[in-house]
Length: 489
Image (cartoon, rainbow, N blue to C red):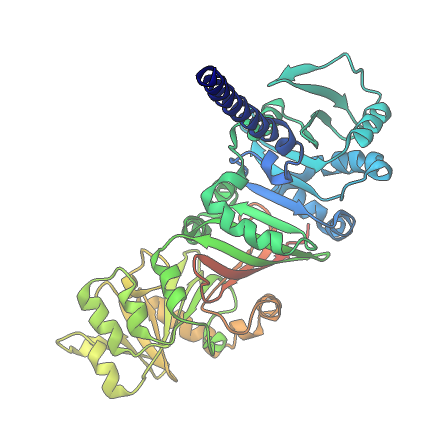
């Protein structure tokens, strides 16, 4: 009898353990399948192919600030759907029990055009009120992945929308809306991307500000065609340097300031920023023409570190180190119809030092005088390899001016440069340059400035000025600030 009793206890124990395992497994599955999804975060419904994301934590403040410059941003971010989104928000505002934060993201639709997706947290009471106010026929819907998708015509646009896992999502494209629904099931959202998670930590630390998040490569690729050709190479370099960027947004009637961080790969330029702080900046605005198309400027505390992290020939590196450089500016200028590249290097400018950079055989024609200023033929072949941004120009000639070496590709270019400086037409008198300097950090590692000289939207977005500044790297995050002055329409 005791043996039978013992066997029964063993059987019941095994059965109990099996049942307990089943219950625990079912509980975990149910939590993952239902409870966890019902508390989904807004970014969980944003497909990973988003070119940009607006994380709006203060919608009222965002709408007020964006209104004066909406005409500029509407085309650039395809925000023509924004009034329709605000219509949905206004209807539900009185019935909202959760916070009113929302996410707006840009995606490529089934026709190859950009469509904008809205996602916001919403409880069932607010959703039912929205359905009622929109006069939607509850029986007229399509289904996708078990979710109902409704169609509604507003005064602004036709939208498809759905209510899934505590989120309301709307878009003009059904394909994009379906991708948002799939996000919660297969985790192919931006929040699940390894490169994005680092930025997400920064965003969640400040939930009072509105954020603009860019996936830089697809975002820039979709806009490069709007640029004049001579702007494209520098922007391609910037586009490939960072995968994701997140910026706090400040908007005025004619300006936009973005302050935030970029997640970067370990390329040459970002490595040099990681090892060298901005410190005191050296920028010779008095020696740069006012009507340049763009410049980039890099400051460094150790020229050996900079040279070691650039891909240049050993002969170029040895010559570059002789300069004892503290800063480099590379700028593009169109004195006539052709765009010409120049480089300015702050360094030792004694005549004895300059002899190191002349050709090995100093011929009579190695020095040309123009308006009493000597122009030298450079003895540094392939010097462009040492510059902070890609350029196809050969820096064949240079002149010296009070601690700066000014390089360019031809004698004619440097002669026109001298004429311009003597006429006083320099960057320090350019009001648009001064606008950008007032809104960018006074200390930086790397700064870029672009100006749209023809004042039209066709060659360089709707911008009059686009400038940005990078600071010393913080691990894999690069602090940076962007200043934009819109062109007057």
